[in-house]
Amino acid sequence: MQLGTLLNPNAVKSIASCTSKKRLFHDLGELAETSHGLNAGSVIDALIEREGLGPTGVGQGVALPHARLADVDQVIGLFVRLEKPLSFDSVDRQPVDLVFALIAPENAGVDHLKALALVSRTLRDSGICAKLRANSDSNTLHAILTEMQSSQAA
Image (cartoon, rainbow, N blue to C red):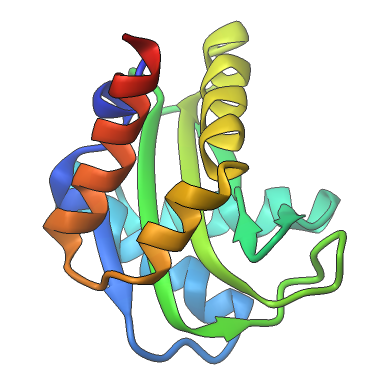
């Protein structure tokens, strides 16, 4: 599994201002709708419900919100770079500026876990995160995420 198969170039966005976690989930829902034709409301509700189980801020300014939806047939990714870091109840109590959300089918099982592990490994790389933070162009962000990961696999 590679990030290029999870992350559509249209599912990458830089956001200048986001005032709350709930607003971020709305932005992710809208991004899922425009890039994958998903129902924004369903995505928002699923992300909020999952976040209620425990925060998905993993530290170092990174959050990995994820949810399962019945109307999805494969695991998909959504990436948002926040220009202004957002409080996210992360494990290290640091604000978040890099958000990689995963939406998986309800019965995804191991594929969902593999995707989560892949994204987590990728965003633990401080070099990749530094490049993501230094760029705001969506195409460049997508290229950093997918090219870095595929060059590591080679």
